[in-house]
Amino acid sequence: MVSDNILETVKQLSDVEVTDPDFDLNLLIFINMTMATLAQIGVESSLSSITEDTEWTDYLPDGLLLHLVKAYFAKKVKLNFDPPTGSLLEALKESVNELESRISYMVDPVTESSGQSLPDGTGYLLINS
Image 1: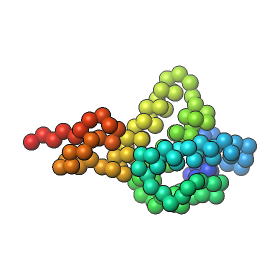
Image 2 (image 1 turned 180 degrees about the horizontal axis):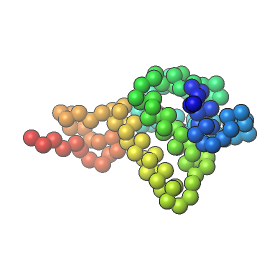
Image 3 (image 1 turned 120 degrees about the vertical axis):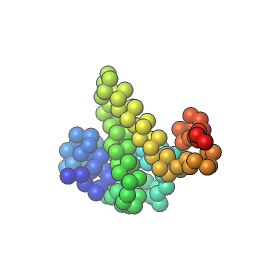
Image 4 (image 1 turned 180 degrees about the vertical axis):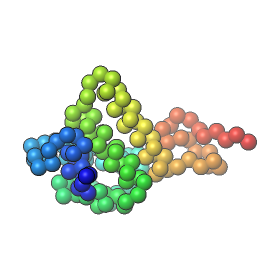
C-alpha cells in the first residue's frame, strides 16, 4: 500500500526500504527539486518545501491532479536518484515528459475558443469548423 507521506511514497516507488534513513537527504533534495519543477509548470501549493513529515494532502488536495503529481514525483525522483540504463532510461524520460505535458494541461487547459498555445509550446490548438 502506498503511504500518504510523500517521502515514504517516493522511497517505496524507488525501491528504498521505508525504514532506512540513509537516503532521506538525497531523496528530499530531489523531491524538492521536483516540487520546484512542478511550480514552474503551474502546480500551485502553499508549501515552500517538503520535509520527511509532509503528506500528499499537505501539498495538494486529493483529486486527479494529485494522482498525476504522485506519478510524476516517483518517476522524476527515480530519474535523478537511481536512473535505469539503456532503453529503460529513454522510456522513463518519455514518461516524465508525458506526465509534464498532462499536468501542464490539467493546470492550464487549452479550450477550443481560447486560441491559446499548447502547454508544451509546440503550437496552437487547431479547430476544425
